[in-house]
Amino acid sequence: GEHVVFLGTEKYPGADIIRERLAKLGMAWGADTNAHTDFRNTMFTFFSPAEGVATGPQQAPVTTNMSNLHQVIDIFFELLFKALIREENVQSERSAVLSELQLRNNIEYRTFVQAYRQLYSETMLPDRLPIGKEEQIKSWSAADLLRFYKTWY
Image (cartoon, rainbow, N blue to C red):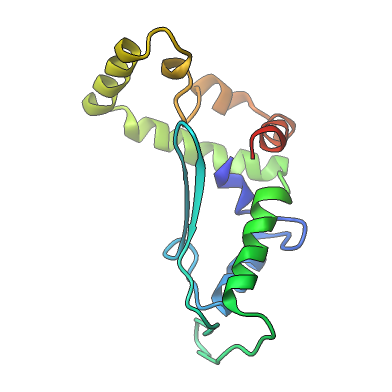
């Protein structure tokens, strides 16, 4: 889910608009923003200067009536509650998530999964790894992901 929410919200309908907004706050896409999911949470991290300082070729200071904190909270709110989950974005991010799944397929990860199966055999946890099941990653539509987002975010 966190892959797709960065691609557009009601207020910031495209990834380019979100990138531009972050740059006006003195933040770089990817370097100052991240998200990951574990068994209990999806965590979004933003590293923002206290005051806006534009990045890019002009390096012009940003004049605003709101501190960066208020603007970052606004972006967080949009990501968490107002994401536009579009079919084309789900399709484009599907390969990224499948790639992450493939990169994890190493001996350490497989050992971790087996140990988890032993330790938590009487729970659903071993069958609910945060990255998801490959067959669901391959088949979920935007409607499926939107249902998940509205339920769990």
